[in-house]
Length: 331
Figure 1 (cartoon, rainbow, N blue to C red):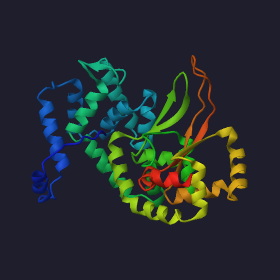
Figure 2 (spheres, rainbow, N blue to C red):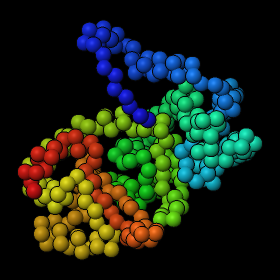
Figure 3 (cartoon, rainbow, N blue to C red):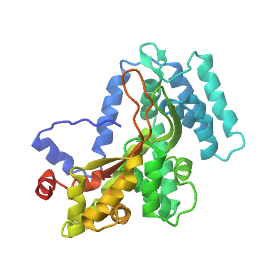
């Protein structure tokens, strides 16, 4: 989801503050939708979404959202199968893909008039409240789930919108070493992630996409834990081993080639007398660090082959506390 900044007078802001029960962001969004609607002509996408909403076809609406979000269309049905237990869920999803194909739509980048299909779907979903329905369902799922899933969703809020499994799973295992199962599949089931496969000239690997409607939920979850992370950070900043770690990082992120990892651990132990895995586990549990993963890149044209590597990264939430002034003093 994109954000915009609107400047208003102090007097107008004071008047708005007197009505705190009003969701002013939604008021502004509605005004924008109304204005844009003056320039918009109904399309086949509008008709499909209206029909699916009328008959409560959540699976079909979800299929359209997957069509927008996924790089590889062939995995749409796999996600539907993971998310819904209905026996006819796959058939309903296939009906949507067939309808799109009958209208000459094969890819989200295909155009209806001058508008890409993905943009048309995103617009009508926002206009007709489909994203709000998905958001409400995700929040409902989270309210009834266990602490493992809740912690995994918070962890998800600290990553970018595309997740390569290796780094996320490694980080989650540090948070909950006793968890048994596939945590990413659990996140797909509740609608916090979509599973996809990246297959390009340079890369070939599984990855997961955070749906656009889920990003707003994740933003709120991240904000709810800011005090927890800030408190941990301010306590740790007084501890020598944490200061050593920040010096070693030298920035808010550090890259380590997978084939060099054991040597890096040995060097860290010799330099600081601490086990790097133990340090990372402690910092993951306190919301300070996440581990990301970048797969091996094939040689493409003039771009040389690169090995896979881990990226240690100060979480966005912790970065709000860690100023560059503090980091500079430690280096």
